Image 1 (cartoon, rainbow, N blue to C red):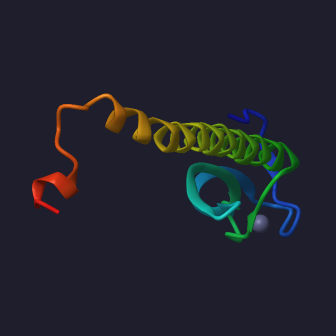
Image 2 (image 1 turned 180 degrees about the vertical axis):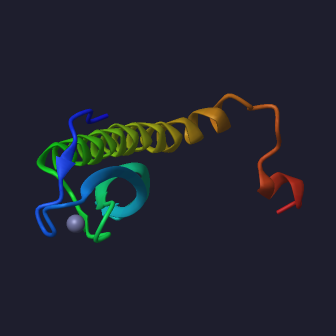
Amino acid sequence: MITDKIMCPLCESGELIPHQTVEHYCYKGHHFSLADIEYSECSTCHSELVTPEQIKHNEIRVRQEHQHLDEWSSRAEIVSSNVIWRRPESFDQTPWQPAPSQLFGH
Ligand SMILES: [Zn+2]
């Protein structure tokens, strides 16, 4: 958290108070929201602005979430390809079950 007091550049009399808000994003078709996106509000004129430090913080948070989504989607691809390759195997391993054609006497 920023400890230095930052004066409002708009009214030049108020102090910028750091706040956190929820922002919604979309990345490669995945929607996510971050609850610790920072901005500042002037205590006097109530202008809302984002300081360079807060922009840096917010960008890092968004980038972290992008990395999570990249890792998650590459894992999901591996899992789905495993499912495709495992299915015929599991049928081969149960030879004692009659084939559907035998069940119905065709
Ligand atoms: Zn102000």
